[in-house]
Amino acid sequence: MKKQLELFPELDLSSKEPIIYDGASGQLINKFKEKEVGPFETALNNVQNKGKRVPVRKPNAVPPKTKTIQKFNNGGAAIKRNFREENLPERLERLLYEYEDGPKPKHYDDPRIIDSENMKQKPKPFNNNDKSTFPSDRSQRQKMNSWDVILDTTIKSGTPQEKKEMRSYLRDKYNDKDQRKYLSKKELKFISAYNEPKAEPILNTNFKISPLPVFQPPKQNPEMIEAERRFKQMLEESKREKELNRRTGLAGLLGIE
Image (cartoon, rainbow, N blue to C red; front, side, top):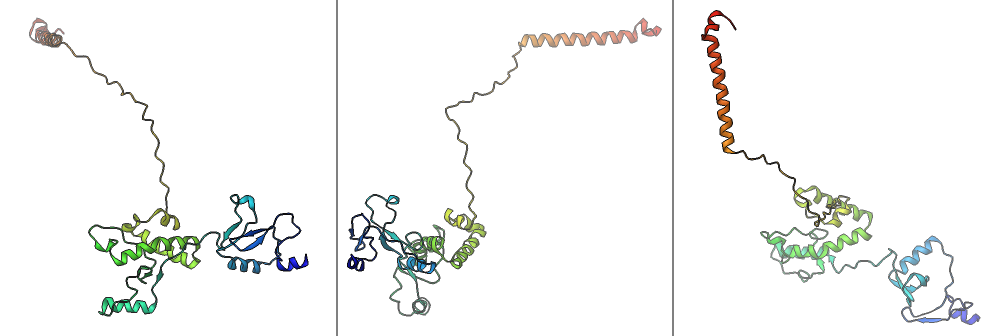
């Protein structure tokens, strides 16, 4: 028993659980003894175990038959960048080639090496009249291939200084009225400038609204209209005749009203 403890010090040989060989980690496992470690040792273990597969300690929290899990110090799988920024000698070679007719650098057409001027730069909005916004343009292509990855890594695992620089860069774009409309939802959320659109009310298309009735005045008979006109005319003539008699007749001469 003592010899077995020396060969496998991490195994709890008093446990009734069977010892299993884990092919992924190359270890014999059953039930591990918990070790008392301080905060420094815990942080050191997180760094050393970054990306390594370690035995499962909580079998009920993972899918069945899962014996090992991949452990990262940032809580999840890191986004892998398949590109880098050009170094100083490479930049000098490129500038000599572009502006001084120097020899073409070996890295010039390497998609994994991004020009310093294009690093951390958002691609230009597409414009059919501007060839520099086409993917065929070298600078535009470098920005398109690197921007989304840089933005995601900065948001998820960037340092405070990197996040500060990214926010400052995006706020400058946001303050530009011509550039603001090209910011994505993720970019707006990162600078706390995203406004959730209001949901439009859902109308029931099966419900039909009947039009309000319109009052139509009854049509009059032309003969009735003409008879009414003649009647009014007769009243006016009778009134004028009475007024004339009152003024010129015997009653008018005698001053009798």
